[in-house]
Image 1: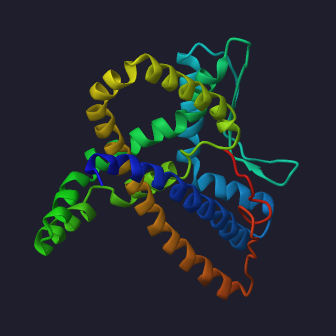
Image 2: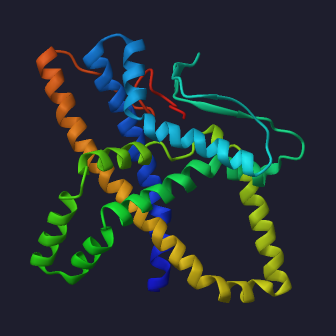
Length: 270
């Protein structure tokens, strides 16, 4: 397999993995909140507070992209609300969908949290945690270098604060179902444009010039998604152990359904 294809393949694989991990984390965070507080209204509030940095970045991303794309915005809310169908809305930004909006601008607004969240995760990873050093140590295969890199990582100033921010951002950056409404039309347009370029002979010239930039871009995306997956897996272990401990102490447990999330946490949107 061409090594240049690996970043593209990993990004394609990582996104569904992140969606599954996020679904589990959202469900169990709400479940733990219910165990601790008992009342659903208080549980929703606690659950929203834990993910607040990610929700804030998510909604600010929508607002920022809508503004720079010339789309008029309306109400901006970070207050969690129970919907009529039992789902939870952690926040929202209203924007006006005029006739000139189009699927491209709407897709960019909907995908803004993923773009901005990925950029912030990369900044934290590269500037705060120096993950490049860890990557070099892993590639070297030497235990002493890996131990040194891991020790340096854990000695990062305010390590737990930055780790929590990574967790909140990683679980607030994926576009919700409403954010993805215009994506089918956007993808259709891109496919049509690709076919036109291919039939006119421009596709080969563009591909030759874009291969390296695209490989580098997807390499960074893969790094950001890898960090998000690693942080999510760590917190899944912590949350699972904590939930089991609280369940044993209180003598009750949360029963999770077989759908996307447990009752009251299905289709969580931000």
